[in-house]
Length: 160
Image (cartoon, rainbow, N blue to C red):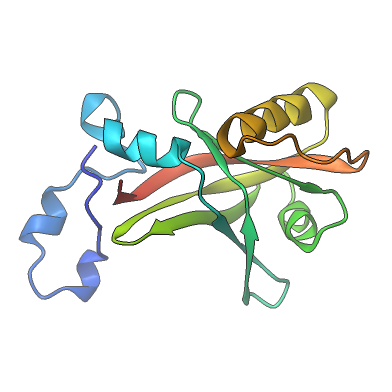
């Protein structure tokens, strides 16, 4: 995948370069696969942000830990089920909420966009906790109200 910054072609005077990039919402195969540097960046320990939307449409941006499973096309965020971020995602219903997670380190940055759903089953929460422990090298505090926000990634932006 070309992980260079993508721009909205409607906002740029010359669209020749932007138009030649694969559409991350529809492209498949090797041309849309994240490169090794991008994947390595998502394995490093970085604080991230999660952007959800409040009922009035305004953005709600909070710091979170995120894990990215490129093979499954999933990003995961563990949180308390009563948190605002979980409530915002739940409010979107079965279709899921459009969200973004982002991390920055100097000139390197990466954003994952997609549809988020709150998952409560013990196996999914345990898998998210395992991945969190692997990336952040610490076991999350016990929380009987923990849920996982699973994001089906539809777009990747940035570079590692």
